[in-house]
Image 1 (cartoon, one colour):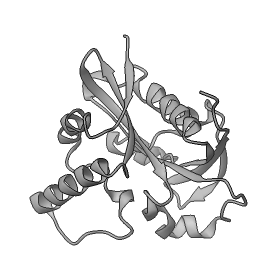
Image 2 (cartoon, one colour):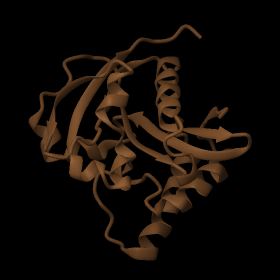
Image 3 (cartoon, helix red, strand yellow):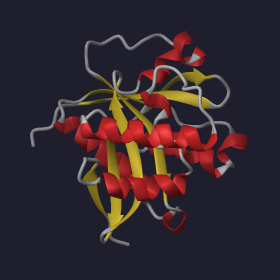
Length: 194
């Protein structure tokens, strides 16, 4: 299957929206907030949708969208520490030594693939494109938080964080556990020349 990738932008937001509606309503906002919002059900989804759209308009929400033809089939969310601050509040994350570098800190938090395209290389392509984009934006230290719990990995929604193997294939190294469900992985991306 032939795929193309594009950066999330205000013009491409409707494509992201198509996928987010299939995903269930979080709109990849969880990590973009320092704290949870106190809303539930449809109100929670409505607030997430509104806030995501505003962040995309301001250029403060990064993602790679994957297409087959003109149809969006998946995405990978990434961004800077400032754009994805919720990670810092995690108990497991606080126990691990902070990065010992002055490099810009990037984070890869979520993947989503349309059910019809799962297992067909969409996440792998989205990850590579996100790393390329980070390089074009000056590079830096990139963190990922894949699921290691076999019980959780068996549930499709938990695979939204990726697997250790997909990150290892891209040169990420395991740094330490984040509780019993996730592991912290890191890789340095140099600035690209293009």
